[in-house]
Image 1: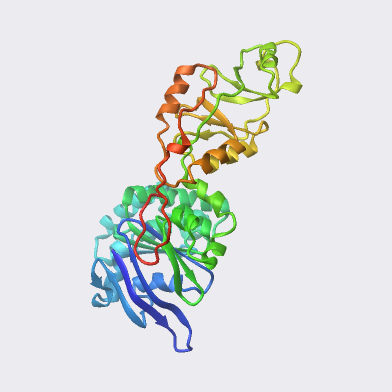
Image 2 (image 1 turned 180 degrees about the horizontal axis):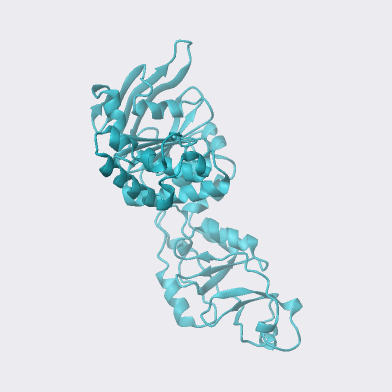
Length: 414
């Protein structure tokens, strides 16, 4: 879709922003450009829409040299989102979003109808349409910026640190919304960030640049974490890359064991009889309610009569990662992570040691995880008592491989 062939950008003062870049970006995917300040990532992005012209080499879009297309025409077919949204302060939100359709000659009625559709698509209510940018929060303005970039339904979307100017909570919401939109729209997206966590969360593929505009590694997030090309990449990704890799191991493949659990209607005597320091209390649908500490149990009554310690949080066998499972174990007062099925019913427990051993047993496999169906079905049949998951971590297929890519798009799912 987008191809860089031996592309360089040199400035008259002798600065090299991009040095001999050869890179191929897959159609319909998110490619994140990341690296330290001054590494050439934004320059690379801007060469796609000719806001920056390369000194040498060729940038192609769908097999055509972009220099063969007039710059204004090229840009009208490429969406562009920047920091702080870059909205026109004198235009309403609706007319900001309608900007590109109007430039393409659409009638005002059609352009505004399209703008209204896009505002709904990015999660903004129709009441926002007649407001001006200063009347919106930073997060709302960024949503408008994304909507405007999608105005003419371009196949390519360039995003230059679009979420860096908002607070962490809003940033997380925008990232989730961005991934939701991409599942619907399947655009070819080039995304610039200085945040490796954001790159790992959003990217299908990540290009890591070093100072001087050299491409250090181009790979999937999984392979980047597993096999950094050199010390620079390893240092840039961070010392906790082993923990980050767990985001790509599905919790469905983790074995769970039976744990000390009783329904909330059970007696304190039954809880004492388990002879466990903590007892997991569940409702009549086997949904976890909290932990009862044996040392604090009364002499009589039921578990409904005593205060429960909070769970911390649970992890789902459907959709959550091994990182979420490990986090659940560390936050639990009992140090046991509680796994739940699609209905929220308890499927089993595991402590941090057991989880770590299971992950190590797969070699940290980043391939397709075993399905959770067997575990969930066993949980359904077991009633209120916790069950042991049947998944064997040693059976997980190791699809990780080794080595790294420095040019063509890597495979694998995010």
